[in-house]
Length: 253
Ligand code: FPP
Image (cartoon, rainbow, N blue to C red; front, top):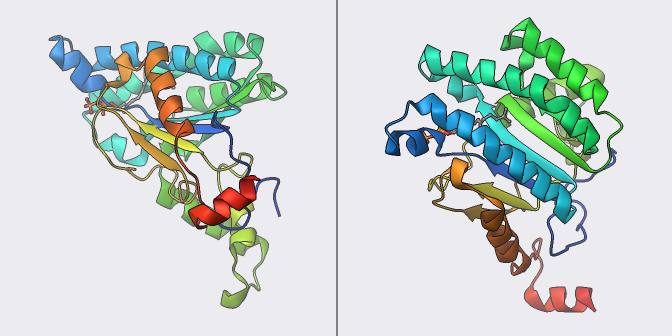
C-alpha cells in the first residue's frame, strides 16, 4: 500500500483549509477576446494568475496544488496556439524554477510527456530534481494529462508488475500506487474557473470524494480574493465520505 490511501478505503482527516487543491484554469481565451487581444495573450496573463495562486496557497499551508495546464484533448487546438502554449511552458519552467526552489516549493509533472519536445522533457527533469527536497508545497502541473489515460497506464503498470494477477485479485490498493498522483492525498477541493461545470477528464479517480467549486471568473482574473472565497465555501462543506450527518457528529466528538 502506498503512502496515501483512497478515500473509498480510509476516511481522511478534514480541516478548514484544504490539504490538496486541484484547479482547471479555464477562460484564458475568452479573457483575451473580451479585450480584443489574441487568445494567446490570455495564456500569458493566466501564467501571472498561476504565480499568485501558488504563493497564496503556500501562505495558507495548502500542501498540494495541482493545475491542469494542457489536457490530452488540447492537441486539437490550432497549431499556433499549441506551439505558443509549449513555448510558454518551457519559458515558465526556465524562468520560475529557481524561485520555486527558493520558496521551498517542489515541482512535479504528471501526464504523458513523451509527445513533448526533448527540450521540455529535459527541463522538466531538471526542475523536478532541483526542487525534489522542497517541503513547503508540492505544485503539480498536469500536462498532456487525461484521467482515463492515468487509470489505464496504472492498470498496465499493475499488470506488468503482477503478470499472474487474477481478475478477483485486482483491487483499489493494488492499482492506486501506480496512479500518477500516488504521492499525494486525493484533492479536497477542486476549482474550475470560466463558468463550465465539468471535470473534463482531469483527475477522474482522485476526484471521487472531492468538493467541486465552480466560478464564472475567468482564470486570469482569479486572484487571492477569489481563492479566499473558494476556501470559505470549502470550510462550510460537510464532508461525509458516505456517512450520515449523525455519524459525522459522533465522529467529530
Ligand atoms: C484554458 O483556457 C487554459 C489552458 C488550456 C492553458 C492553461 C495555461 C496557463 C494558465 C498558462 C501556463 C501555465 C503553466 C502552469 C505553465 P482556454 O484557452 O480554454 O480559455 P477559453 O475557454 O476562454 O477559450
